Structure formats: structure tokens, C-alpha cells
Length: 136
Image 1: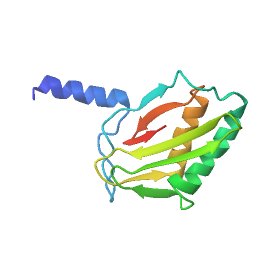
Image 2: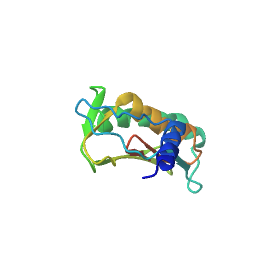
Image 3: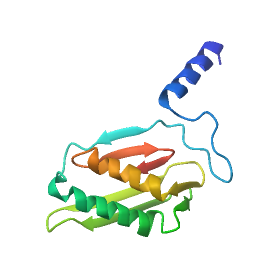
Image 4: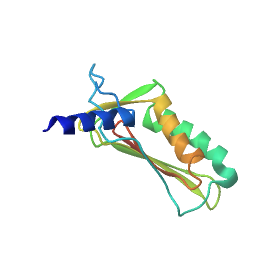
């Protein structure tokens, strides 16, 4: 690899806000994929059900995605889905997947933060990748 290519990669890494030295201590290195945010442009809008969706996001993090311990280690390829009825005609379907090449830890705070972004940041939900986890 040419030095100019290495410098370009280094600059791109810094610009993306990614850490250059991954955490170790029993965790897999996060994916080098930058944060990707995509909002759906089809489907029902949250409307007045946004607050209820936020409550269900917290419930999903505490019940299925992380648990009450504050963090959970996911194995590579783990995918968990939680669905809740918002009313008689709307439902919310939260899905989180570990796309890291090895085990990785998801905290309650990260779980809620990234699901919240799909509700408050996207009128019809969305998709986001962060640290090797996919949030929908």
C-alpha cells in the first residue's frame, strides 16, 4: 500500500469519528463500517404513537435485547426481533443484529439511544449501523 493511500485512510477514519484503537478486554473490535442512517420512506408514520413506540423501545431493550443487567454480550450473527402493537392498525417491529465477526457487547444505553434515533429521527422508522450492530 502506498503511503498516500495510508494517509487518506487515516484521514477518512478521523473524519468519520471512528476510534483508531479498538477496545479489547474480551470484546471483538467494532466493525469499521461508519455509522449509517437511513430513514424508511414508506409505511405508516409514527404520528401520535411516537411516545408509545419510545416506551416499547425501552421495554424491548430491558426485556429482549439487553436485559436488566445493563449490558449483554451478543455472539456474531445474533439477531433478535421484538414486535409490539401500537394500536389496532399499527405495530412497531424492532430488530437488532450483531454483524461483528465475533462477540460484542451491547449496553442498555446504546440500545435505547439507537432505537430512539429510529423513532425521533425518522417519521416512518429507519435503519442504522453502529459499532457492528444493526438497529431497525
